Length: 132
Image (cartoon, rainbow, N blue to C red):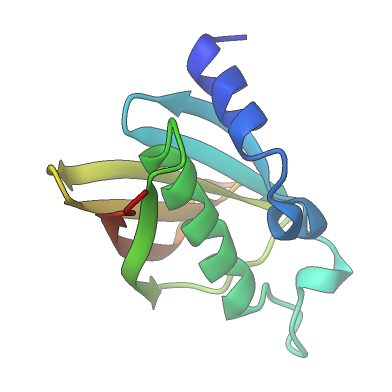
């Protein structure tokens, strides 16, 4: 396994909510990350599609992983655009840094269906460097 992914898994091992939802870290690069989630009944709303909060949690976690080789960045603002129903057997979130400055950064996360690659949501997250 590559060192960046291994380090991210160590750093985020104590993220209890991500673990509870089933999100896993698949790959980490410099200022980018890919995380995934296998969908099951607990993720679905009354219409049988993944609840918006599930997509938001996946996007938020992917942005945190992409931003943090060490825990120093926190979300300042985040928005999500739901583009299609999140159905299928799983979701993949790929997050990249659009701009990373000295104190703030902007990340974009694209969430796709794992079975067919269809984009279901795009999130943008502004991060701020946390004071020590």
